[in-house]
Amino acid sequence: MGFPVVSATVFAPLIGALLIMCIPAARKEVIRWVSAVATGISLALSIYLVFAYDLAAGGVQFAEKIDWLPAFGVKYYVGIDGISATLLLLTAIVGFTGVFASWGIQNRVKEYYITFLALTFACAGVFAAFDLFLFFVFFELAVLPKYVLVAVWGSTKKEYAAMKLALYLTLGGAIILLGIFCVYFAAGINTMDLLELARHQFTHNQQVWLFALLTLGFAVQVPIVPLHSWLPDAHTGAPTAGSMILAGVVMKLGAYGIIRVAIWLFPEGAVIWAPVVAILAVICVIYAAFVAMGQKDLKYMIANSSISHMGYSVLGVGALTAAALSGALFQFFAHGIMAALNFAIAGMTYDRTHTRIIAAMGGLAKVMPVIAIAFAIGCLASVGLPGTASFWAEFSVFVGSFPIFPTLTILAISGIVFTAYYMLRAIQRVFFEPLRHKEFATLSDAQWYDWVVVSVIIFFIIGMGVYPSLLMDLISNGLSPILAGLPEPSAGGWLAFLGGVQ
Image 1: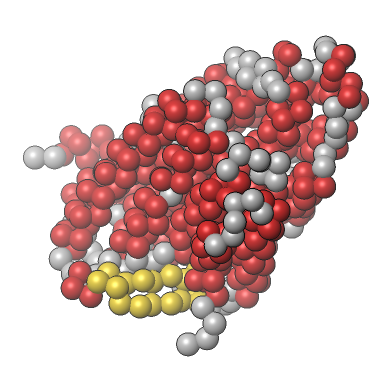
Image 2 (image 1 turned 180 degrees about the vertical axis):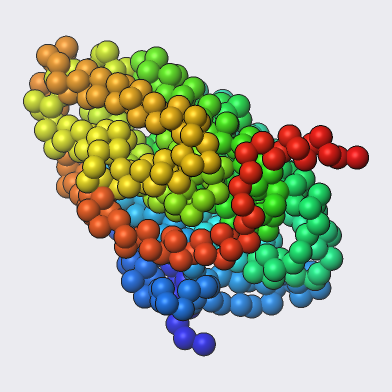
C-alpha cells in the first residue's frame, strides 16, 4: 500500500490541532502558522488528488480500507471519486483561507484554532468516506465544533444561535441515524460499504420511504425551507471563519448526503419524490431571496442569500438529469467559495467599522479599495456573472432542469433578478455612497492576511469560471454510477405512489 494520500488530506488539520495542543497559549503567532501549514498541506494534497484522478479508470481511487467493526461490517473506508475530489478541494480552500481570516483573533487563540481545525477535519472526512457508518461518524463530529465556534467566539445572541444550531442538527442527525439503521436491516447484508449497498436491490416501498427518511434528515443541514431558521442566526452569531466554513462547506454536507446516500441507494424513491424536492427548492430560492432583500444586517443578507443559492443545487437534485446533477454539484463548489469570500469581506468590514448595519456604512471604497473590489467580485459571482464559477453551475442546473420541470425552472431563474437587486444594492450602500461617519475616513484597507484570503478565493472563482471543465469532468465521472441506477424521471410520480399504497 502506497502513501495514504486521502487520509493525509483529511487528517492534516486534525494533526495540526493536536500539535497546537502542545504549544503554549501565549505563542499565538506559532499557533497561527501551525494552523496555516496544516491546512496548506491539506490544500496541496487536495489539488494533487484533483489532477491525479484517472478519469479513464473512474470509480473510487486512492482507496484505503481497514476493518473497524467486523461484526457489523463496518470499515474505515476512504477514497475519492470525481465528486469527493471536488468537495475535498472546496473544504481545503475554505479551511486554508479561514485560518488567515482568523489572524486578528486575540481571544483564546489556541482553543479557537483547535476547534476550527477539528471542524475542517470532520467536513473533509464526510466527503472522503465510502462506509455509511464512517460517513455518519464524520457527519456528527462536525456538530460540536460548530456549536463551540458560535457559542464562544460568536456575537449577536451567540448562545441562542449556538443552541438553536445544535438542536436542529442533532434532530437531523437522529433522523439520519434512524435511516442508517433501517438501511442496514432492510439490506440484510453484513456491510456498510456504500458500493455494496448500492448494488443491493431494495424493494420499491423500501426505496420510497427510506429515501424520504434520509432526505428529511439531510434537509436540515442544507437547509431546505422550512427547516432553515437555524442558519441565519448561526451565520450571524459565528466568527468570520466560522461563517465562511458554515456557508462554504457545512451547508454542502446535507445536500451531498442526499446525492451520495439517498439517491445512490434508492434511485426509485428519488424519482418518486423528485417533484416534491423541486418544489421545495424553488421555495428556497424565492423565499430566501425576498427575506435577503429585506435585511438591514449585512451578514443576515448574505446568510439568506446562501439559502437561496442552495435552492439551485436542490433543484438540480430534484431534476435528476446528468446536466442538472452536475450543475448542482458544481454549484456546491461555486457557491462554497463565493459565500466564503462574501462572509470574509463582511467580517473584514465589521472589524473596521464595528457595525454590520448596511445603512450605517457608506463610502468605504475610498478608504478600503481592495476590500471593496473583492466584495464586488463576490457579489457578481453571486449573480452568476459569466466568467465566474457560479455562471456555469447555474447554467447547467437550469439546462438540466428545464425539460423536467419547466415552470419551476423559470421561477427559479427569477431568483437571479432578486439576487442582483440585493447584492448590487449592498455594494452601493456599503462602498459607493458618501462617507456617513468622519471616523471611517481613517480606516485601514486589507492587511497581508486579508490579501491571502481574497486572492486565493478569487483565483478559484475566476479560474473555474474560465476553465470549468477541470471540475465538471470530475463531477460527471463521479456521477456515472449514480445516474446508471436512475429510472426515467416522472413528474407527479409521488402522487401515483401514494394513491397506490394499500
